[in-house]
Length: 204
Image (cartoon, rainbow, N blue to C red; front, side, top):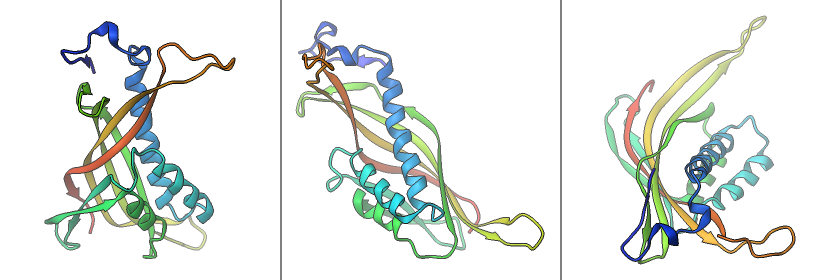
């Protein structure tokens, strides 16, 4: 992911924290933290208080959890036909996962996290922006208890969705342990809207 500068900026103007190749790793780690938190919030095997704490932590990953939204595809349960896209404010989506009362265990995982756009400076907002993509698998699972044997895992619904997430990189003043202003500042990575690109249904 090369850095892209505008006419008013040169490479020499770039903050030091953006000059490191690690910024790509840090962006992927921010998206990974998001997807891991979503997985653990949805998992009813985790204690409710822990899941509630994760809801709060996950909202802090976003630039503005009240303004930004998460898209999900809606489908007919008995076919693979997509009926549309539902859009939820980030907070509402996370709380819906937390308070899901339907039977079965929700298991969500994410793979193939990648950065699919250049990191660009937005003159209007004075911020750096990029777009990342991940593949999310959603499963509703029942575990059948069989006496004298391991529980049998039975998937009653599944889908795989390709999603993109907007990423903002802000350069902030920060200080060393000695209280001195750190040269070059620090990069703070925040997330924006999450959009659903495509979906593939499995079991329904």
